[in-house]
Amino acid sequence: MDFSLLPAPILIGLGGLFGLMIGSFFNVVIFRMPRGESVVWPASHCTRCGYVIKWYENLPVVSWLALRGKCRSCSERISIQYPLVELLTGVVAAILIWFWLNDGRGYDLDFKIAVTFLIIASIPIFIIDFRHFLIPDMITFPGIFLGLAISFLPGGGTPMRSVIGALACGSFLWVVGFVAGKIMKKDAMGLGDVKLLAMTGSLFGAETALLGLLFAAFLGTVAGVPMLLLRKLDEHRHIPFGPYICLGTLLSAFYGPTVLNWYFGLLSR
Ligand SMILES: [Zn+2]
Image (cartoon, rainbow, N blue to C red; front, side, top):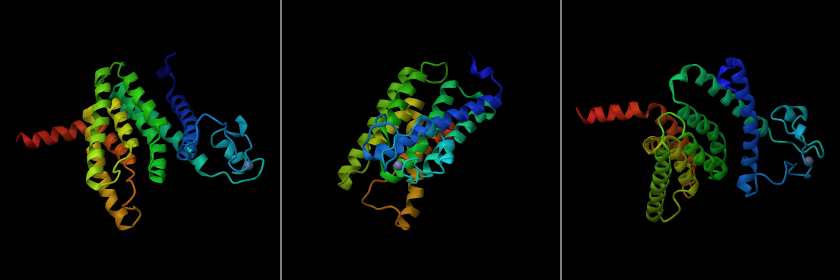
C-alpha cells in the first residue's frame, strides 16, 4: 500500500497518533532509564502500590484524563509529565508530516526520515540530559542503525557515508572528550554524547554532523554563560551537551551547505 496516496489530513492524523504512541514509549524511557531499570520489564505499574496498569488504562493522554491523573488502586497522583510528553510528541509528529507534505517536498526521502527521527528523538534527550546528564542508548543505538538502513534508499546518502560518519564522528568526539578530561582533570564529556554524535554521523554523514557539533559548541557557549551567571549550572558537573548537538545538527542539516558556501566564498575572495 502506498501511504503517500492518502489525503493529507489522514496522513497528518496518522502521524499524530503514531507520535502519541512513541511519546508513551518515551515516558517509559524517561522514568526508568535514569534509575537503571529495564524498559521492557516489568509491565507499566504504579510506582507506589505496584498496581499493574491495564492496556486500556495506558492509552496516551486519554487514560490520564479518564483517571484524572490518579492511580486507580491507591489514588497516588500520576505526573502530568506523562500526558504532556505524549501530547508534545504527537503534535511534533503531526507538524513534521504536514511540513514534509507542504514546504519540505523537495528533500530526499532519506533526509526526511533522518530529520524526523532527530527531531522526535530530541524530546527525551532534552528531558533526560538536562535532568540527569544522560543520553539513552535506547535512542542513540536505533538511530545509528536507522542511519545505515536509510542510506540504502535513493537519495544523498550511501552505506559507506553512514558507516564512516558514525565511526569518524564518534571517535572524534571521544578524543576531544578524552583530551579535555586530561586537561581539566575530570570527565568533561559523557559517552552518551559520543554515541549521539555517532548517531548524527550515521544519519547525516560526517560533514553535516561535524558542522552540527561546531554549531552545538557555539549554542552551548551562548546558552551556558547566562546559565553560569544564574548559577543554574554547577561547574563541577557535566554540561548537558546532548540538546545542543540535536539543535546544532538540525541547523547544519538544513543550512550547512549555505553556511559552508558562504564561508569558502569569503576565503576565496
Ligand atoms: Zn497505586
